[in-house]
Image 1 (tube, rainbow, N blue to C red):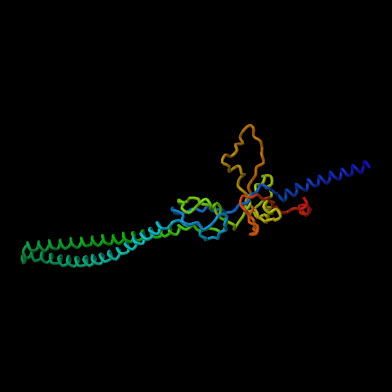
Image 2 (cartoon, rainbow, N blue to C red; image 1 turned 135 degrees about the horizontal axis):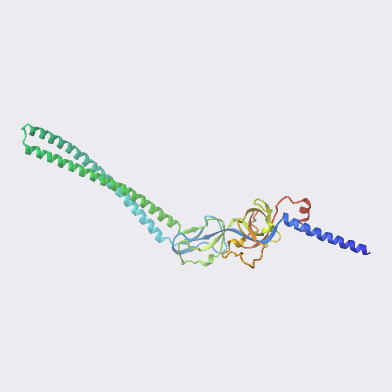
Length: 337
């Protein structure tokens, strides 16, 4: 009987040793962690204009669609801004017609004065020639030369006036462009008095705001949690990551739904351990340093979210990654162990 007891003890030891070996093999090919939390895209709804809230279209924890109105800010002041900008633009455009008429008149005057100067110049030249032959008095020749100079001055003055009027037109074009920009800005601000959902998801903490509250530009009102994509930030021990790579399949067990498994895919591994990004990173260059296994965040995208099983950010999960290449006996024993 003694040999039978020894045989039984030996069998038990072999089973225990094999079980321990199998456990570590499974952990090597299927690294797992329960230090994992659900994440999703979160948009902080914030106004782009300042004003009083006149309407809140949603309530706390409501599902909203992209483009759905959420909050309305009093638009009255911004409607007045649009009206003023429209009036300024119309005034600048009316000035264009007046300036163009002035340019046409100035061009006519320049043409007329050019002809007058050319005639006066020819008369002065003929008078000078006649005065040289004593057919005309020197005084008369001087008078015609003075008239030619006067005509030249008049012509130059009209050309300067034409240039100034054309400059007014260029300035008016710039004023019209500025008025159009001001109108577009006013219309944009008016459109921003209604805040729309940028993505589909669930609004939260809406009860923080009320009709009558004054809100400022870029003031966070409440979060909108997107429900299009969910992922898990799984904090793995650094010693478990030698086989983990992006693209590998994973199983995600969410604590809220213990009887349902979500499928996932490894998207990326963080460039540093979690404590490397803390506000006060640890200082290891000390005499009492103790080596501690660090954890590295691994992002696992959930590939089959179920609307019937809505996920909530910040909730806990357990992630198991299939690193591939496991022997058949490991795959056989994995469900058992």
